[in-house]
Image (tube, rainbow, N blue to C red; front, side, top):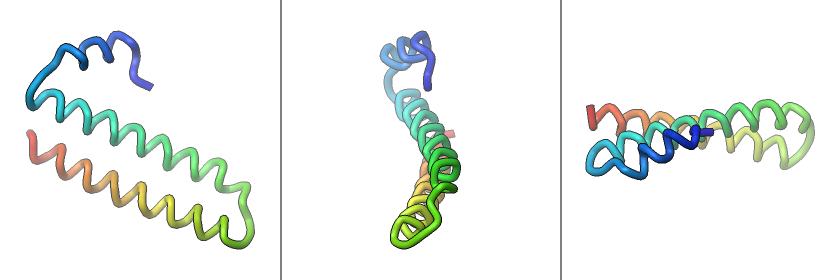
Length: 75
């Protein structure tokens, strides 16, 4: 999670820096969600939940790639 002091800096920023910071935060969120799905999803071993776990992993990874490409376009 983003430290409170960084949130304060984010709230005071504007323009392109807001977009860049937002993408950075969203990428970090998605990476942690991917880790969580991997960790907790390892406990799932059957049926539709396995399909959901795998689909979630693929979606998060695809979104991370998209977000990283957007972020690079700002640099």
